[in-house]
Structure formats: structure tokens, C-alpha cells
Image 1 (spheres, rainbow, N blue to C red):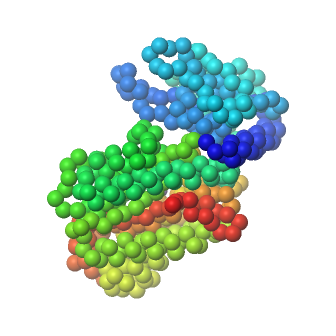
Image 2 (cartoon, rainbow, N blue to C red):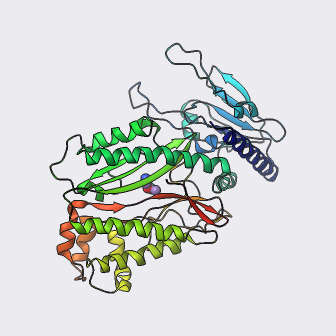
Image 3 (cartoon, rainbow, N blue to C red):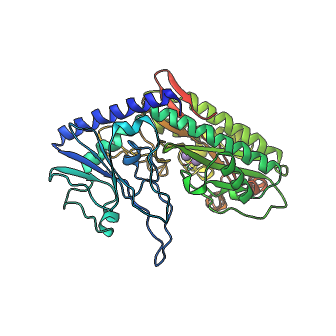
Length: 432
Ligand code: GLY
Ligand code: MN
Ligand code: MN
């Protein structure tokens, strides 16, 4: 870990301490206790599900696998990290890394699973249902006070320099995986082998991913959250879509690339190029004050132009948007906030914590805010050939070139996704 990252982390922690202290004063609290969470067991089994510590815990403590642990923030003392470290010869004991951030916490290693002793006037944040199941109920009515949670979420919207450095590094790791995935596809690997190549090159095991990689060949590229990894190689290779990330010190990358297979029609290559250009065009507009919903609308205008330019649609651009044609070709949102969680908190709220839901014509949009310096977002335009969404358009006698649509359907679809930080001067692309 570079020296400058230590300093950035120290500044990040000081910023959090100041912000939490001012919230404790505002909400008249003696302490805020954050539970890291714990993994759930499969029903009637002794096997545990994958686990990642709660986002508000990871905001302070870069230990994404710290379970059964508590962080307590006080108004006038160092934060206390109650780290669960049982005496246990079945597992490797919990140890802390030799990094400077540890010195900013009062660390208490706990043998037992317990809740910290706090005054009545404290707030408890975390998975209250899991706590109750574990017999660790917190005082009645003290778990997850709504207004405090809104304020804590809001603190995660603007990233510190430390957080931006972590997301940049997560991007670097993920891009090594994407390059390996592309090479494996060129070597006619199966979806499963592409995923394994991705994991090896990005140096992570599957349970550490910020989300399950989407590795879809051919028509699977048109299944938005395709969840399988076909172990067989396919006879024909039209396309590969890889939407896969990585985590660094708890912070996520979320990158998508779509690759051309040797059996794809030439038009598919032209469409991949058009989507790369569209991604770059939209990134150029990312700057402080930009409404994200306006970028979503611009994506649809441009998708209409792309459909017309490539003879997939023979009507006007206005009608392609107003008749829902572009929405059938791209049913998801242009992007979302990115951070500890891949779909990070508070994308559908105003800075004051009021709900700001997606507009009815773009129900899948996860970000409706005005962009601000320090936000990290994804920009991920897509264009897909999804039979289930296109079928209803056939009944409407719209000027869609169904012959071309049928030629392209075996290619599934295209998505190109980069991670962008908003800066004073506009933006910086964190995806190499
Ligand atoms: N990987 C999920 C998404 O792009 O939002
Ligand atoms: Mn995304
Ligand atoms: Mn993605």
C-alpha cells in the first residue's frame, strides 16, 4: 500500500470522525454503534453463505470479511473497534494488518459474540434482524433510526480522495481480468473458462467479487443479469459480454465490455463501435450540476439515431423514443452511484434525503441526482436484442427492420461500462 494512500486514508477517517460527531450532536447521541453483520447458514446445514461486512462499517474499516464485529463512534474519544477474534483451532485467528489506520482505533479483540455496552442514548446501525436471530437484540426502538441512516448514507455519496484511489485501483485490477477474458474468448474458451481466466488475472476468488460476474456469449449477452457459466464451448461465436468487477479495500469496480466473435455479422461490429462512441459522448457530459436523468434521456435520443443510422429503424428519432422502441432495445438505466456497494446508496434521493424516484418512463434508472464533485458513477449504455421485449413491438406495425433484428438476435446485445469520478473541471475516467 503506497505511503500516499495511508495519508489519504487518515484524512478520510478524520473527515468521517468530524461528520459523525456533528451528527451525534445534531441527533443528541452519546454514541453510534455499527454492526458489521455475520454470514447466514444455509438452512439445516452447517455451511455459511458468502459474507461482506455492512457498508457503513466498511466506510471506516477496510476489513470486508470482519463478521460479528462492532464499531463504536464516540463524541470525544477514538472510535472503538470490537473485532470478533475467537480462540478457535478450526480457523485461522483474526489478525489486524500492520497498517497505520489501525492506530486510529481503540481495538478490542472479542472472544465472544456480544453487543457493546452503551448508554441508552446511543444509536445502533446494522442488520437488526440478523442480530435478533443471534440473540443480540439491541434496545427497543434504537436500531437504524431513519433520519440518522439517511444522513449516514448521504455521507457515502461524495467520495474522499482515499475512496477514489481505492476505486481507481479496483478498476486497474478488474481491467486486467477483462483483458484476460477477452484473450480467453479469442482462444475459443467457454463462459466458465472465461470467468476463471477473469478471476485469475484480477487476483480474486469468486466470493470476493463485488457482484457475480456476467459472462454471456451469444444470445446470453442479451440476458441483462445472466447468471450461469456454460462449461461447454459453443460451435459458433457471435459475441461475448463481460460485466465484471473487483474490490480493493472494500471499494468496487463495475466494468462491462462487449467483444466481437468471428461469426458475427459486420453490422454487430459497427454497433459495438457505436456504443463505445455513445459511452464516450455521455462521459463527456459528466460534470458538476449535470442532471443524470438528462443524460439518460440523451442516451435514448442517441440510441434512436444509432438504430436509424444502421437501418434498424425506419422512422423518426422522436417516434423511436416516444413509441418505446429505444426502451425495448435498452431497458436498463444509464448508470448508478458506485462505491462500497456496486449499486451504492442514495442514488434515488435528494441531498436532503427526500425520495427522488426514477421517472415512470425509465423505471430501472438507479440515479436521479444532480452530479456533484466527488460522486463516482457508472456510464453504461446498452443495446440488446431481447425477444421478450421486442415481441410486443411487432404487434404495433412500427417501422422496425425485423430482418436485421433477427440477424442480430444470436449476438444477444452490447453494453459498455466505465467508472467516472466527477471533478471540479468535469470528470475523470477511472477505467483504464
Ligand atoms: N454490474 C451491474 C451493473 O452494471 O449495474
Ligand atoms: Mn453498473
Ligand atoms: Mn456492470
